[in-house]
Amino acid sequence: MDAPARPVTGPDPQLSFGELGTPLSAVTFVVVDLETTGGPPDSDAITEIGAVKVRGGEIVGEFATLVDPGVAVPPQIVSLTGITTAMVRDAPRLPAVLPGLLEFCAGAVLVAHNAPFDVGHLRAACRRHGPPWPRPAVVCTARLGRRVLSRDEAPSCRLSALAALFRAGTRPIHRALDDARATVDVLHGLLERVGGRGVSTLEDLLALQVEVSPVQRAKRHLADAVPEQPGVYLFRGPGDEVLYVGTSGDLRRRVRSYFTGGDKRARIKEMIGLVERVDWVVCAHALEAEVRELRLLAGHAPRYNRRSRFPHRGWWVALTDEPFPRLSVVRTPRADAVGPFGRRPDAVAAVQALQDALPLRPCTQRIPARGASGTPCALHEMGRCGAPCAGHVDVAAYRPVVDDARALVRGADDAGLRRLSATVGDLAAAERFEDAAAHRDRLADLAAALGRVQRLSAVAGAPEMIAARPDGERGWDLAVVRHGRLAAAGRARRGVPPMPVVEALVASAETVRPGDGPLCGAPPEEVAVVTRWLERPGTRMVRTTTPWAMPAAGAGAWAGWVGRAREARREPAGAPGEPP
Image 1 (spheres, rainbow, N blue to C red):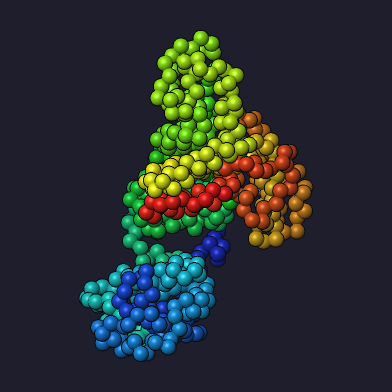
Image 2 (spheres, rainbow, N blue to C red):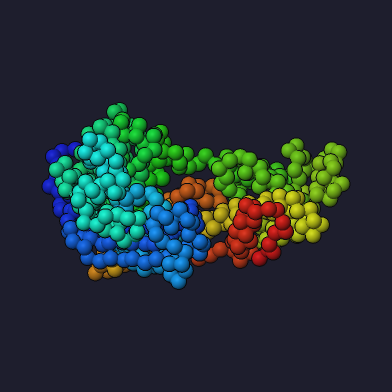
């Protein structure tokens, strides 16, 4: 698990054809154009779609259809495009057209003139009607023209102007297929121009569209030796300090993107200006890469990363160790603690919710086991505290309240959540909807926190779990997990018997000694990453020292209720849903 990182030093290795990039002659482009009613992308404003598929300079297919937008076409649009409401009345609606268009574009690079407009409408259509947006590479001929052509040669980069400049065989007339055909000729003209600049691959073409600073361009060689494998990369500064840590399924492609302007964040551009070296660690699979990234972030706390630098800097809610325990917000988790919470106010809100669910004393004074002689507060008169401070309750009588709290946290009994749910229902029945919504939100946050800690502690409590996932190439990704931490990771490739690999991983796995708290001392983020990997469909449990199960009366059963409550939080306050 602790193989040393490999720095970019020594002579450059000979690059394979795959590392050189995808030749433009081997790329399939789909040039698309849309006509719309002029409405925003979030409405079905498309009236016509035209697309032309080209490869190696030859047209290999076309796609064209009118689309019924469901509204009348405005007069100014009719005047511009010639498309009338009568023409689209019998045309198919967008949900019927979209799957065919996506199939036509599958695996291709999408090209459009003023691509943000066309791609924005298509992305919004996928968001509204269900087919997932495939996130293709996109080339904008308008942006490319502004990068390649001088103002003297092309004062305007409008489609009509570029079509005339490159003597396109089709004149753009604001009809989708004709404009797409004209854009094909513009694309080919621009590709001839960029060839003279040494642009011969798709990666170079995409990078040409982005504004790249001289500093970024000068440091592109730092990515040359990085392998095309999954793993973690580290950018190091002038003093060999780690500036940034990241992970990727293709290390070389991801590292190279930083030097081609793919990341526009100001702090990343600043970081690239300081980078002197790139290190990397090749990983067996994505789980190992994620875990290594978390550990490197915790170990180096890179100043240009904004998350996961301080894995143990969270807040927990735990019972105090005294004769009459109360709830306390602490930094270090104890047994039967709830958390972690990213902000202290969230932990305080959880304390308030637990006190509403259980008659635990809310005061912070220390109460002796015998001889308490304080004065009861108003909560005693309201029936929400037994007043141990005044000696009204002894240690034995108070113990069931503490046992109920521990049972709620462990998932042995959800009676406390049901009491809170009943309170919400009573407030709603009394038409006190604002109070009901406030209690509902507090209950939802508490149930979510309990469900999270119960889910993670089920993994952290197991001394050893060995799991396998199909790697997509008829092999297996393997992981040895001990007390919620990844102790070893490996891969049994296609044709390799997996069990000998499993036994070798177990023999060489990291020794993990359990610590304190519900997660046995493991960093919460690492346990969460491991748990998500174990829970993904297709993961198989090879063996485990203890059964892996969630408590039947745990907060996990409230997950649906929590989801509905959080959805209602974004709507006007009203009566909440029923508990599970």
